[in-house]
Length: 395
Image (cartoon, rainbow, N blue to C red; front, side, top):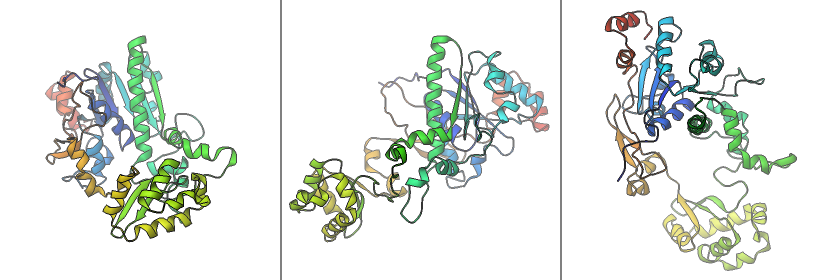
């Protein structure tokens, strides 16, 4: 039986967030039961709301990263709105922000400014480059961090670099913020005190670049850009069959022997000195690729996959987004549910990491300011006071 008590039930998160990194972080916290109050600019909101209109009139990025949150509009530069924010922080466990460099400190929302008054409050600051160093005030967006971290130098083809097809730098920072907040909550349980977490998008991406960095250790050549193929293992990547493309990957010499015997049906290749180790196969990849392409040219993709399965060689389909929506494995494991949005119900993937201890929270994506009045009333504001704030543009 799945219990409905979630790990972060009773935890309140206040977030001044936009774009992807911080919203992705706080959505994970909401999945675990936290109450996430998203503070947005009146009339405009998180600018990610306007990225596109692909999901029933809403932005694809926004619906992905903002379910199960409450939207409160506040012009935090106005004194009356700052008072509201102060009341919210009195009952909060976590403050998350990814505002422009220095903006949170100017609003009095730095950890140093808040810690004495709210000693149990955890403050998580997400930025492009961190809060010190020569790049501290430099603006940072996902593509720019992909570039600064060296990701673009090893991604793409010989002809040109390519960025990742999703916001990988934002996702990296969001996940380190998420895990850092969970660790800070555990630490607070031991010490009774909150702490500050400083998450840099650059540092998050550089951590993920560990393999190519060490491969290029002490001036050695970096992994070449290899398109969808693996830069340092071969054969590993896409290969054409007569009617489509098959993705496959070999990991060791035992698999190489099986690949030659069962898939290529050329067992003599296993003893060819040009291909006697992964290093040699990489060095002679063009010659080996030509042999593989020739062997696959008379086979359908289904036949190639059949041989790969028989040899227990790893393989995969080259799916597009429409294929993923209807992926049979996700369907078989019942990984889809529905969440409400202002535009109607939409499908949503259950969070990875299935557990029998609780059901993840999968509540609605909020409309801009949808919960403003309810939250203000909860804080003790009268209807007259709310109307006054609304008239002044404070909410």
